[in-house]
Image (cartoon, rainbow, N blue to C red; front, side):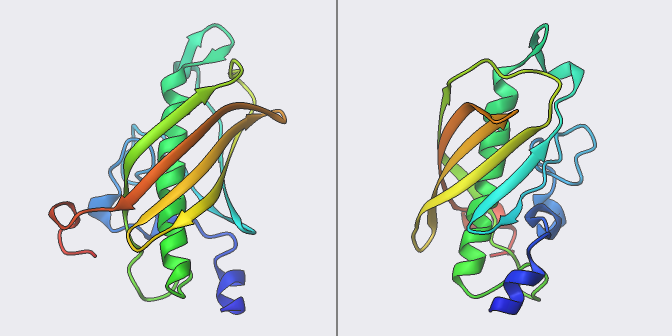
Length: 166
């Protein structure tokens, strides 16, 4: 599996979701109007980098809090998918479908105003992996300052949502 870990080092989980799971406003690669975030492994944590756009303004110079919550949400469900996939011995690029996770719970703490302009770094830390559930602690960081902290409980998408993909 060490070879797999090298192979998936710079691969983004969202690029491996089936097309009908790629329409999400936050992370869907097929949603031209969405955020299209990309989440990858970075050692034992996950990483997303996102450059906010002018339309993400709350007040001049600062990001709308809903953007921060969306980034934490989609980054964390991507992290959960990566965690379940790795737990089962797979790496992105294997010929096995990536499990798709959805949010069961999203908690956010807005610690500092989030500046508009600099790149945002979102880091996820997996705190629990169950059979179908993953708990992820996530931080949104700008210029080295943790602006938003979140916890997401993600679960594998129910069969009614998967169209036979899981």
